[in-house]
Length: 366
Figure 1: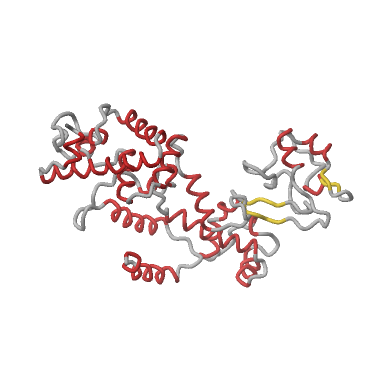
Figure 2 (figure 1 turned 90 degrees about the vertical axis):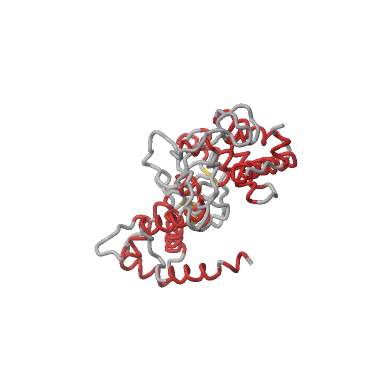
């Protein structure tokens, strides 16, 4: 029923975008749409926009890195346009590709094409997303005749796939120069003299086929070698997201979102870790003049960990404590604690708004 309730919104949105195919959405349009989504997420009611505890882009950070995994429309639009660039590379006989090539790069290739004179909005948009492909394109070695040793990404494994050496030997330009064509094997002596031990081992491990097929352009960001808007977006958002969490935090967030408990409880724990709960201390920091006293014990300043019973209210201390506590416990114990924390927050709100103390709060603070 929830899905059917949004069908009309989805259809209207798709109809509006049908006339915008192959075009780059302006930053202003993306920001307006994201502002609407942000207001929907944070608002408490139709008349109250709520407090935006963080920027929208922080909500778009992947869940394992501490965000909520919402779509950044600007980045997603780039990922979709990069898919059209991938189509130009992979389907040269397509009518759309042939038209683009004849007009904008008749004697070259897409990756080296320039904007040109009087470019269409479509071409300008696709070219604006080309850098997404540039960062992830690589080669699968066949005969090596199309691959530049020094400029292209062709070495498998982690990293950017390009050779790392201090001096370029101009006697060797193509990967084919490193292959013994008669024996269909790598020229081991040449490779070991040009590259370091680690890269030489990676190159020598690349399999060669006796029929010497053509080299194949691939997308290095996926095991299939094919570019999709999903893997393209993941690469963009990961590169643009600040790395602010350590391995313990990554483990914690991965574990949290895997819990089979109501979403409202997982969201509350997420807010607790980020200190996004509307506690008295946080409201005062936002210049909302309220009494800082905890409504549950009428004592110290109310913080997130005061609500769940921690004695140390210093933010870095209790955040690390909460993360490590969840990482050290088994899944069942963590789920129980998460539910208890939600119940404590629920009872805190009952006390604050209605003056009613629930059983969980009575037990915890007794």
